[in-house]
Length: 451
Image (cartoon, rainbow, N blue to C red):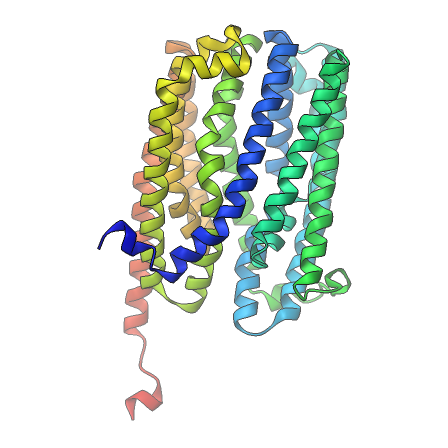
């Protein structure tokens, strides 16, 4: 069966149809992000750019440690409740998600404030830079993206999500552009980042409230959370496991720049931030389809359609992998002129590391549907153990690579890590599905069938 025939699959067509608006939003976000990168790279010296890059990395890391990524629970338990006609229960799990996001955001901000000066000593920041980091960390309080993301997806409101995230990205770039136009100092740039991040986050949360209301989940905030554990069996384990899994995954994603910052210095951090920023381009174009895919996989799993589950998973992984590989081929050839055009000639030394890092991102994109499949199958604990094991491999190889070959060595470590994940996670998903199918075959037939 040819590739064209694949798109006659209803589930795959739905993933493409709903994913296209998200891709458009991500493209706007990517262009806005590149514009922000260019403004900062040309306005700041390499050292100051590296300090700000590390600030944002640390805040994102703390957010991931504190955030329970409630969108996954909203999708899993929400789709199951909808399938059973229990829409009131969907409203309850939405409220649970927002409550968790609020408290985890406050907790993350408190942790960041407590660790501000300890973190600064590890990266040779001045006391003033540590104070500015503390101010920037307060943006964690208004990060409600987890539950908002879940609302957009379960309501199939991908177009609304694309529009609001695009506007949020433009707000960030606009804030930076104003600061640069006013020839802002380091403090002014950090304050503009705070304003841009906060306005964007608040806008996303407000629009997700509206989407929930328009899709019949009115006054969800008035729903009682009493008896939630009985209503959604296993939800506590699911939340803890998925939070742990995505926390480890985010640690994997940001470990490389922490190693660079600790071993190679602020200037190398600035170079590697450019590598990571440009390396994220294929993901911004193709990963939106994976977002829609997860919802459809969760629905197939809830219905027990494992043949359709495997078919959709296999075809999506191949299409995403092939698409990202084509992007890599073009970007690898144009690496030097692209980096010089966006960040300036001072950053072209990042080109060799960028090529290898981008190849690792190709493998990550191909593997993303497979890892989401484990969550859709209700096995976040298994995926957590998998992520911890591969994190250990990444930690060792990244340090060795940095000390041996510098930034190129770090990128090679990332590439090796992604390859190991692809092989191992593919085997895990196949093993779980095989077990599910064998279990179903061994179940006794209903009495009516026996008669």
